[in-house]
Structure formats: C-alpha cells, structure tokens
Image (cartoon, rainbow over all chains, first blue to last red; front, side):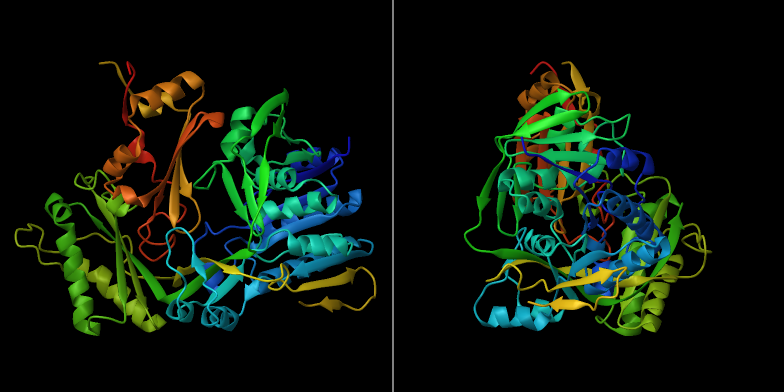
Length: 462
Length: 108
C-alpha cells in the first residue's frame, strides 16, 4: 500500500529548542518530509504589532540547522510555516537568510528554496469592506469596521495548503512560509502525493504540536506520522513516550474550543467519527475522519494594533487594612494621574497578585486576599516619556494613598525597586476575522531561489 | 455523602487559549468509570461553570463531553483579547485552578 511519512520535531519552532535525541531517531526512520510550524497567536499581540519575535534567534537558527542538515542528508523536503512566531514578511526573510547562512556554513550542495509572504496591505482589506465583502468576525466578534482597521498596525492572512503545494510543485527542497494554518503545512505534503483530503488534514492536525499527541507529557520531542489512503498512524520517537488512544484523541482537544472540528482555508476537518486503535506499543492508528470542502474560500486574518508605549512598576502591600482597601489605594493613584494628564490619552492597568491578579473578575476567591499582595502597574501613553510618568505616578502614589484609618503613615506600600521599567509597547488583537478571496494564492506571493548555485532569483508574484 | 474532589478523580485539569478571544478548559479522566461518574454527577455543567467563574452563561461558547478521550471540555469568551494590557494570563494557562476542588458526589 502506498504510504508517506513525515516527522515533526517541534510544535512551535524557536520558542524552545527541539530535543535532539528523538529527532535523530525520527530521521533514522527515513521520513519523506520534515516539517514544523514556527508560529502561534498564544504569544499575544506584541510580536505581530511591533514586527518582532517572541523567540530568541539562536534557538530558531539551531532548530532550522538541525532540520536542514537532516533534510539535505536524506534528500527530502523541509517545510516551515509561520516563520519567526508571527509569519510577517520580515520574519520570512529572516528565516530564508538563516537557511542561506546555514547552507553556506556547512557547504551544502545546491538546493531550491521557496518562500511565500502572508502580510496584507490594510488598503486591500479596506477595499474589500467598501466593496461590500464583509470581513466576518470570529469568536463572537462583530464584522471588521474601517475604524478598527485604522487602529491596526499589521495584518497577516493564515495560509492553507495552497502556497505550500504550489511551491512543492516547483520542486522546492526547502519551503519557508508566512503565517500558516499549522495543519496545512503537513497536509500539503500528503495532498501533493495524491492522498485524500480527510486523511491529509488529519495527519497535519495530529502532527502539528509534535509530542503533545504523546504521553507522558514532554514537549519538543519528535513524532512520526504515516498516511495511506485509509488511515493515519502516529508514533512517538522518544523512547519513553507513546502515542496512545488517549493521548492522540486527547490532542484533538488541545488549544481549541471544539475537539471535533478543525477549520482551514478551503474546508472543515470533521473528527466526530474518528476511530482510534492502538496498533503497537508506541503507535496509534486513526480512521473515520472526514473533510467537508467550503462553499466559499475564506481566509483567517490576524491583526494587531499598537495602543502606546508602556512602562511597568510594582508595589507590595503587607498591612491587612491596606489589603482590605486596595481598590481605594488604586483609585487614589489613578486620580493623581488624572490630575496630571486629564481624563484620557493614557491608560493605567493594575494586576493585584495575591487577590485576583491572574484571573481578574473570574477569580472566585477575590474576596479572600492573601496576607501580602503585589500590585503590578502598567502605564500606557503615546510617548515613552509620558508612559514612564504615568507608570511612575500610578506606582509611587500607591505609597501616598490616603486611607482614613491606616496606622502606618510613613508609606502605604513596599518597593523592591523604586523605579518603573520599560516594557514592550502595548498592543491589542484588533483583527480575528475571515475574508473571502477568489484565488487561493492571491494573498500569498511565491518566490523561489537556488541556494549553493549561481542561478538568479526568480519571482512568481500573484 | 461520599464526596471527592475533581482533582482526585481527573488525570488532567488544564486551561489554555483557544485563539485570541477564548480560553478552553479540559478535564480528562484516566478511565471510563470516573469519566462516566463525573458526567452522571452533573457537577460540571454550563450552569456550574458559569457559577464558579461568576460569568454570564452566554460567555460559555462550547460545552462538550468528548468520549474518545474521556474528557469534559468547555470554552469561554475572554473579557478582552489575550495579551491586551492588564491581561493577567496571556496564555490562559492558569485559569483552571478553581475547578481542582470542585466537589463530586460519587454516589450519583
């Protein structure tokens, strides 16, 4: 029976390094592809909005190096999606440059690299809105308005299998993707070899987080997926891990609201009738998945908008009376910022650790604070100077808060340091929507180049 | 009444972002018996989740009993997108704690 094998060494390449031993065991299985996703929206809106990485360059390069050397040695393609955490254009360019650099350093023979971009011009989205093509909100969001678009700094579109398949058809040995559905990276390889959509997308779904589909828990270990026309099998490569019915079925739940349905650009993977079978100690086989093609091609958009510069301060409280009245203390500090800067044009945020700093309004025990509190203060404003002052007033004035019955009149809070610290600019997820497109490649311009040989770069935009 | 804590019965109790606007909770059991017991007890429901987290039940977008993994899974809308200034848990990874001590009537 025709089959295809893919290994995935890391569920979020760069965020923490892959574990080498299980990766080498995976490579020894002679997979047909090596692939990983390098992105996540878990990291919050700052990296996309400020066009930075959440992951250290050294870790990204280390994993790319391991994967590239193994892929070239085996002579099989290597695919990376969502380059550099966000999949923005600069992150794609950075990964392509890292690949060139690693190839040079190791004197690798000639190979073809392909890459595509996912960043979206805001004016293109605006034109869609004006043409009456609704940018539909996900997760209870309203349709995107031009005002929200104005408040957005950067948008990426989530690629499905299409740009990966197009680059595989151009015989690319290495593919670096902009923002991508993680399952699509793997599904594209299987579809390229003619496997059915249901099995192909399931293969992607189960592999995308690497060893998160294995037990016992242990991240960043390699797993191997194998696909035929009938089933998908997944095998843990780490000697101490197994892919069990529970771990594989359980992974379908991870980080998603519904364990039965996975939406990608082009359709829906339906796992409702999946059947799981333990076929050997470390391997589980899955059958019964379905794929329902979408009637209209819609892509998910992610957008982040800059709110302002940000500084952070911290203050501790030990006096039980002050703890009981911490909200009044915070109100005092806010009022002092108001006095200085007026009612708007700035933001102050207080997280009261020891009471409800983690859960906020969801905290069932917020009326039973601990015997000591830490208040984390964030000041946000248009300029660094003003943000620093807002954070400083918001923090230092906690010290001077006027509570009627306080015994300690020499200072209401403790400081680990009497200063405020610069933080990343505050951002917000402004776009979590879908947009209709006519051609699956229209948002994802493709490029290829030869590495290790003197052939000029070619461009196949749009 | 023989009562046990959910944390004594479940293998995994966790929370995590499901996209930028939601947090999803997974309660996973080792074997079908405890899974069925907790389902039967009715201790975990849209109503009880809304009560424990003190939210409008309309903010619970999904509540699923997922038999293949012996798991009960529910998802809530955040009050602001993850990582907005003031969000105390960008990954949504520490929101499950109130469910650890949930009392389950084992005679159900």
